[in-house]
Image (cartoon, rainbow, N blue to C red; front, side, top):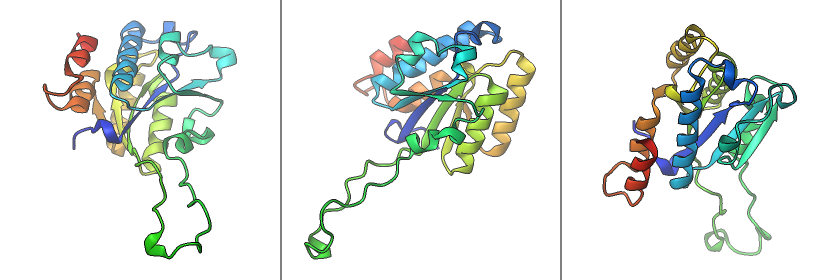
Length: 200
């Protein structure tokens, strides 16, 4: 199954100012997170952020935070434990007006936005907050795509162990370029050249 931009949302987990200097290959990880956020903005994919205990670890890097519609401050390692799932799948709006005012066949259907169940997720630390958030999203029946080159931990071993576990649990492992090319699908896409410029 390929990613579909119209069904996707992006979650960027804990790229925090006091954490990133300790992340293995942190500069590349952060740069790929920025690319993902820019791609999401280009293709109208909603983007969300999380910050773990920001009073201790600082806020997300400014260029990442600016690309997110909202950023969830959390103490649980999983963002889902603190309401991320409600952001990704808001409750359906009840029909407006008196349901008895018109016969059922004349009533307008509820105007709820189409669900976006493909969650493209990346973040730090891969074996803690990213892992626990992604596993909870899988449990909540989202399709989860982990962007490996935009994920990091303090050590390669912890990062790779997270990828092994996530793949075993049913998450798809992808790269930033895979996401970009699947979101546009064709060289005839109106945003293809802009997308290419972001990943070169």
